[in-house]
Length: 393
Image (cartoon, rainbow, N blue to C red; front, side, top):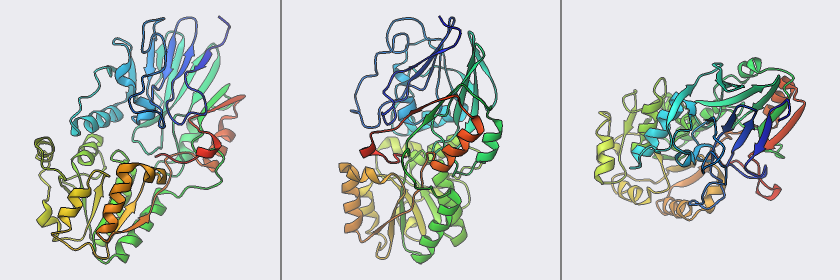
């Protein structure tokens, strides 16, 4: 082998999601992420990666940058015995998300260690240093691999418009790295993303404009930044915040300052009557049924599967003058379930408004990253053909 680490990309760069990146030396093979393709078939098998998903030269360790499916979706396909590292909070959120929907935490996910900001992990002659970054998934990391005097920085997914300090992150990153492997979700777009704090003002304005009428928010159940943003706006105008069993469980797993049932003005609710959701709901003492929900000005987090629940809730309180805030990637509107849900909301006289910002690096963030790290070489991954550019999360 040469005197520098070898890098292999087990997906084509113009693949939206599905990151599986290998760094190999004389004594170690490490894998960064093991995701599913965002635009691939839901039941598509993982790619052929010997030692990771099938028999072959052993993989020394797998490092997961965050819990989104396009980075961690094949975690249950990893050969038993391969060490897996990810953030402790990220692992707890992934477990809570699965269990709240009646799915076991993936058996293949045998987490042997947790990533911590700046805490180096040594695997053979490769050292890996994680750097906590901002993304629409909590507890996300960039990863720096060092071997044979060479430094490779893999960004995973990141942004500069969240609530974490981007300048503080940049100040920790090394200069003059040998290879920068960065995400390119918004590559080619000149749009500069709004910050979560700007979004908070937009939500507050919408809440006030509705004068106490119902407001529903369609957003990812694992986007805790959006939960914080909505909560802060709701508290300023006296609205209660309602979270279903999935979002309630995810927020509980995240802990800390993340709003969840039991926080002032936050209540759990259940949109279905099956035993599983009731069992999850019972964990939360702060919960409301449809009759009590109708008594208060509220903002409710919803998912596209809740059309029938909204119909029943509309029998308890008028939706006239209310709104559905669409707070996720607009391209999901083309999916049948989402389209049906939006049609249901329209039939219930809810106006659809759009308040969203990207979970990915815009042009300003990329420019600042490059200026800081001054890479000798660069490779863009997690991107898509020019006719399919857009923010999936």
